[in-house]
Figure (cartoon, rainbow, N blue to C red):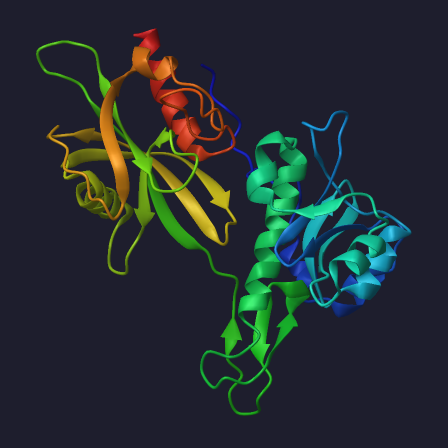
Length: 321
């Protein structure tokens, strides 16, 4: 096994925050022929066929399609600069699907990035995830949380402000922090290390993955790790160490990857959280099939997920010892 690249991360853009509030500069960039535009329709990204049907590609519109997409957009967000060219996200959700596709030059179909992500190249997946996440936030914050009045976009789409005089409530893009944990047990008396993986209720039915959950107010990330693991499988852990993170815009999470040592090994599955949970050696995990292959008893998490990154990292480390 080799460590996968964390999809949806490493957005290849410079984010010039000082330009977001410059309306004249943004307008000039919107009108330039070298501007790039990423269309989104009702949380779906525009995805085209690559060299083969199994290799879809991210559609990023250039002139003249970029101008048509911007003209049809109900919301635009300045994402950043790539090689001196501005990149915007454009929300086409007010149009019907056919008109949205036509505005983008009919170069693909609007699809769920969650399903297509594993096959799309890293740069395109990161850009589409960024665009999707920002436009989702805008659609969820059309009204002020203080007074219920309409809000309007500011700072190139990186802030919304209430339009009611006397309120002026300001909203900034938000993400939900969630921990995802590879729990391991290393016997004091020798024997192979084992990792704890759970079978979740969501499909595919044979996937065993890491444990995860959202952080609660007043809780450190390490405390979240311990609480979530105990809630899901009844195992107590210690020494939770941060490993990596991954933007996960489905719809608006940041996955914070940890590894933790188990103090207990007895498993009590919470049926509201999991179908099953088991301890596996690295040799057993290496025999797992791939996500989506339902012909095997056990399958690994998706290749584009941080869960897969954590599992593969652990297997590689144990195998090298």
